[in-house]
Length: 348
Image (cartoon, rainbow, N blue to C red; front, side, top):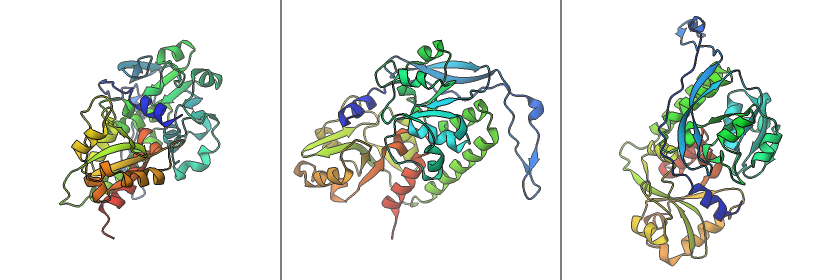
């Protein structure tokens, strides 16, 4: 997918759906306390029973507008297509390597901790995958980024279209407009119930919480909030500024680092003039498969006389971020935040 097509696609996201927590049916007799290695009481997860009803979403045919949708799953799905790389990695973290029969949208760096298992998953398409290939993989369910459940050449087909073919769906709450970082925990909990890996989900949520706590602890106590803007590349005097206004999950996660999206309330495309007026403290240069090499974009940014007055340029605060880490709407953003925190706040 070309840079123009990718950034145009990102601009489709204008949804304003409210986020819901999980609501499932469980057997209270399964809720029994356990003990840890020190014989101390521990919270025991409840075992899922089916039918299981979860609060989830459907999305308009172009992948832009979300609506709340309660979905009832009659049984545990056994075969999964993940519509993007980050979703597959999340499912692997929950121990579902043998259940994933297809993945698509490999646009960034992978998570090394699940790389071996990821390499065994059939790749339906290196870019975004169409409905025909998804259906051909014969999954029980398609899981992933909500904007990709679209009736377009780059979409998997809508929720309704897939349901008509007896394929269930689960849209990550983190990918909907209005999402916050807290919705990651809800997704992990929901997926744990749906695939009956509740203990794995609980353990992984705890790991996510620990990592975020460490990121927050690494922010200097006297740190003032810094404004940032996303760039999807630069070539010559052309600069591709992306507002990220609809990506509330990303914006909220970065706020834990005292970072504020300068264009969080913007509508439409962002011009170079608007970038100069906003004068963000930090520029985040997105690196994605098929895009211009970040080193080349960085060189053109610094050679652009029109941008020489930008605070981020003058103070050398232009940082490369990875597409998969940020736009998979999952736990991978923690890796991106850890790397960014080191670059921003390290005193070495």
